[in-house]
Image (cartoon, rainbow, N blue to C red):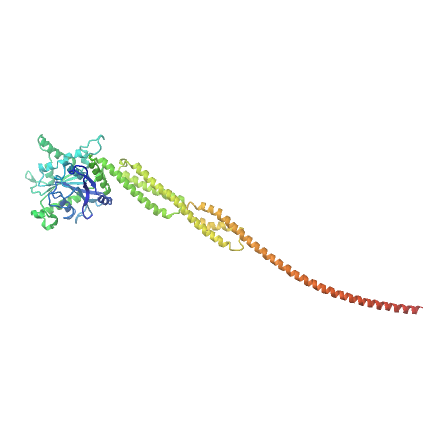
Amino acid sequence: MDEPIPFITVVDHGSDARSPNFAINQKAVDLLNKIEGPVGVVTIAGLYRTGKSYVLNRLAGSNRGFAVGSLIEPCTQGIYMWIVTTPPAGLALNDPAMTLILLDTEGLGSYTKSKTYDVKIFTLAVLLSSMFMYNSMGSIDESALDRLSLVAELSNNIRLQSEGDGQGDAFALGNFFPQFVWLVRDFGLRLELDSRPITSDEYLENVLKPLEGDSDKVKARNSIRSSIVQYFRSRHCFTIKRPVVNEEQLRNLEDLAESDLRPAFLDQMSSLTSFVYHTLQPKSLFAQPLTGSMWAQLATSYVTALNRGSVPVIRSAWENVLVAEARRVVATLAHEWDKEWDEGVVQLLPMDADELDGKWAEMQAKTLGNLYAWMASKGGGDIAVAGELVAGLKETMAKAWKSAKAANYTKSARACESLLHQIQADWAQALDADLVTFEQLEASVPVSLQESYFSKSVGPAKHAVLADFLQRRVLGLAKAVHGKIVQVREREMAEELARRVSELEHAKDNTEALLRDMKASFLKSREEVAQLAAENQQLIKVVARFSDVLEEEDMRRGK
């Protein structure tokens, strides 16, 4: 992100305008949700108009970014956030996976806000930081400590867990507080103690030693000292000289070039920047580093508690973080499941039912395994809705499985029907042959089904579709074969009848010719017989006459 944006904004609710409520900027949440790795959060707090914003801009490697003003009114309202994606040249965070977040808080002690409001801002700054910087001017004296009296009130404004849990917060809170850095701006003293040089850290520790005495004033100041020691286990101090001497330049720091700034200031800021980048740790709770989305949820939980007038409870906020993160993780897993299920299964349908069941079981085990692993890494027992989320994810996957099974059957049926349609077309072509027989049909059906259907059909519908096809289509096919055979037989009978009629007609013609010949022969024979009879009569007459002659001759000779 190239520039700061509002993170926790001020909203006017209720009658107390000097202590308004807060709201989380959704745009900031959207940006944080994109940070999958841990976040390291550096927050600066302190009195208004003490140059807090300019320090953060320098940490980001720029003179500009967070608003730097020169008026008496606070420039920052609420808390602004800067996600630093490009560290200053030559610097890198000690954890390469960590993302640096800078928070600029509204200045404390403004006449426009109440002490209650300052307590809320200070509380949020402490609770959200992994490094908390307190910015003050001049030196660490009793007045400076008095201005940090809010630390002594932290035990009244923050609890580790809800009341009645049987565990006090007195020392436990220190385990959850950030690294503390006191920035002493415009420091003009010499770091010496008992005539010997000391470091800025030693300077801080010496100031935090309890005062002697038992007056109420001493007790109050020692309470602040002990609170800082108690709550902030890791403490550091940086003293920084005034960046420029000229007052006009001081009011326009963001417009100055590096050459306009004092070398001592640049060296001290360089040391501070190097310290921040080399020692910053991820913001964590209960030994769990927070991602961007988890940290945003943590802020939401704290803001909600403050708006309700409640004391922020760290464990309750952590539980809310876990629940929200668990829901986010489940939503992500469900989305990944849908994508993988669609690409790896749904788009490949149809497939055999056993294969579909196997893929579902494998993917379900993988997804649930990822969820269980995440819950174990976050302490699954602390996630109040763990069982609900697991059940919901299982239900989501079960619905997807049932839907896929229905789609698988439908697609299988369509594919199988397409195969059988082609087979039927091939059979219809075979019926064009005149010599098709039931024997040929009986022999070809199993072969074509084996070659064209069983070897290619897939999915749970293949047997049901085939059974329906055989019941409806093969019977029709047999009727078609019967019809073809009947047609062939009728044609053959018609041809035989025509042949026989032709033979009969031909035989009839031959018979009539024979009769004519017989009649002619008969007539001729009758004529011949008549002629022969006539000749015989003549012969008889001749013989008779010859006989008469012979008798006469015999008689003549005998007598």
